[in-house]
Image (tube, rainbow, N blue to C red; front, top):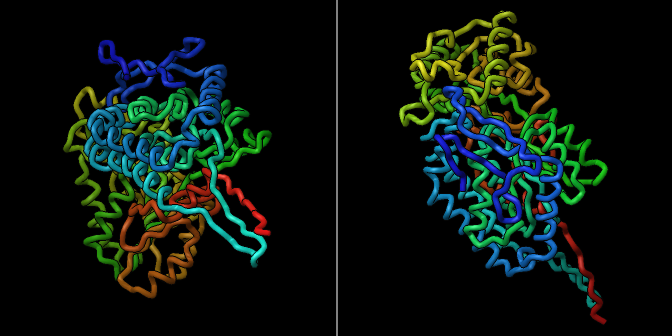
Length: 490
């Protein structure tokens, strides 16, 4: 359990079934981004702590019953984890609102239920899979088993820490692996409960370990640790490149979901009654701190004025405020670093000649919240798709609207990026929907919708948006090793 003193949480590592301080007793602070209040003192892992967590996971993999227990029993324990998450969803959502700045209503109504679903899905999915058999005439038969890899390092981001951790932990555990989890240092609160929840669900000690600290030090130790066999990472493209270098000496398997700069293409025949509210969500959910954000909105020129009018009105109707308030739809940025970065891009857009449509209006905040890292939903009309604000991932409540005349022009703009995580297309023309979906270079294309997730389908990015795919069998392939057994029948 997290312990509190004067409303400041104490967050320790969870290693081999116990919460414990760092070997060095070193700590770091976490602040509420809505008001800069100190909310937690967190243990900062040393290299010794990382080694201990990895060794604990290795011992649990090699010597506990987890890897070899009947599949039905293992999956039942994972489902019990999901049940506990649902039972504790208000507590977990409050923690996520505190350190992420995410509106509580979104956390409790969406992210935490999705986290429970992630675990249940993979427990169900793995139970339905079978081994493969390949007879060779009458002389031999081959059959293929899928066995756990070993110890997984799960490094998760700060924008949806609990949900994205379970997205990795579900297939990791269902396959029979053990885990060392390192959440982002900015948002450790909700993820710190996962070891405890696993223990409550009857999962053996050492199977789920959680350590805390910065990516530059603790994250590096995780990626270099020889007892860790594979790394699943969600975060920046720059960090993904470094992880590949760090893990090269130990030949770690890697799966990365990295940055994005999605094109949200609005054709002239789009149903704006659906396209506008969904595009608002795609632009400003979690204050725009979403890798799948539709941050480049491409609008056919014939409907540009109508779209701008409706989109501006919808953006200005968003309620910016306290993430714990159920009326709030838009909270603060996660940190001062992120706040300064987003403000830099706002000023850069002006220097690039973009027209500010909305975003400069004063926010109505209390004296307490005035200390927070708030930025109003900001919209620019831009005419240069090569401009930095149209090319670089801002990761904040800032979107650029780019007009286009023809389908060919829209595709040229959409594919004019180093990223390829996702794209969105709005049209009532079925042939165009298929044609443009084929032509956009991205791992997921949503047509007349956004953020719809079926955990059976592949998820990942083209170009600099990722390495590998997750979801359904793709996740299970990453978290398992295929073993072929050939038997002579003579």
